[in-house]
Image 1 (cartoon, helix red, strand yellow):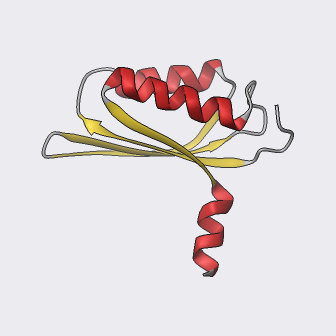
Image 2: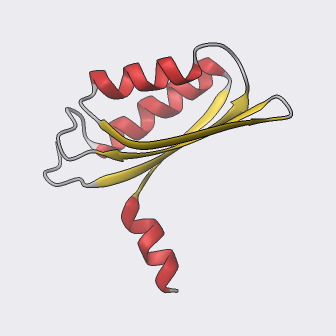
Length: 94
C-alpha cells in the first residue's frame, strides 16, 4: 500500500438498478476506504454518483483499487472511475 494516498474521487455512472450504492460501499469498506462525502442523482433512468474518499488507510494499492472498481462497474453495467484528488487540484490551476 502506498503511504499517504490521500483523498480520491470515485464516480459511478450507468443505468439505475437496485444495489449499486450497496455494492460500491461494501467494496470500499472491505478495502478500508472511508467515504467522506457522497452525492447521487438519477436522471431519466441514469444513475450518477460521486464520492470523496479518504484512501490513507486503504488495504490495497491505488492501481489495484482502480482496477477492481472498474471490474465491479462492468459486473454492474456501470462505469466506475477512481481518480486522485490532486488531478482535480491541478486542473483548477491550469
